[in-house]
Image (cartoon, rainbow over all chains, first blue to last red; front, side):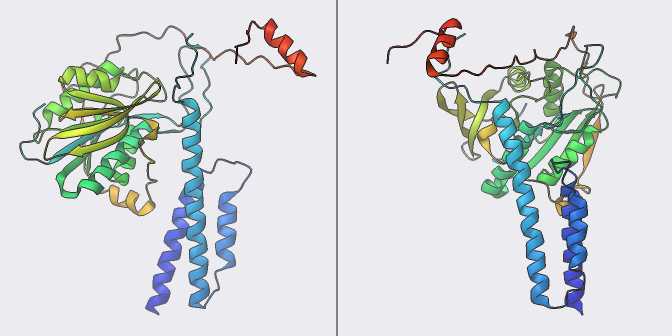
Length: 92
Length: 268
């Protein structure tokens, strides 16, 4: 039963992390928190440790994808706002 | 101003709480400023600075003695310090200015940072800060600080390699038309360019751990400095609206329109 407690803690930590990430989601039309809650609720009655592990891995994948989205979005924005001047720039 | 006697690095990273990069800026009706009742976060270039300090420690390990972050701002600026601590800094210094006070200018900030550095018993060997803040785009603080301290400076850094034993650093700078490599003596001020690194996202466990890290609170009076602005903002306006473009039907029409606009062909 210690294993169940362990996975429970992992799942809760993952949920908290995704929930906090969801606050910064750029598209207001996409209800991140509703989807997050829905997907976690769908898997609440899993018992097979293999399936549980697969679900956790999926959650971690989504977390990493979201992090990548945020950092790329920020980088692209900053690169546009602060471009590197090139030698081909005509002098004003 | 006195660098550490032992060959260990003490790194200071000043950070600034600015309007978040994704916020749509609106000019106030009085045309004296912009709407500040919006989301704020750490200046992205300062995030890169914190990340660089943390990566230096990952590379140099025990040769980096401490990474301190400092901010000069209102009460809420402490949140920015917490983010930096969550990214890997050891401790923070918050020079608190009243919420009603006007935002400090780069020269005032540079003088405050000098006072903070001179206060540090262990000394500071390396100051890494963002090249500019995305709210004022001044790009002055790093250079002014180096001047006030009489330290070497390497601005717009896209690569930093420190040798604590030799007390030197090789810095690659982004300049017009290419890159420049500098060999600098420590102590050194470095300002970060966008291409230096990709800052990490502070994970929730790290944010929780950061709550235990110490933040020292100071006032400008403690540092014996005056942050009153020397400049007055006369007017703030939005950039002119983009004029709509026009469509052309053929290449000949395009060439005619270009000639009209005064663009002359170049011999190929």
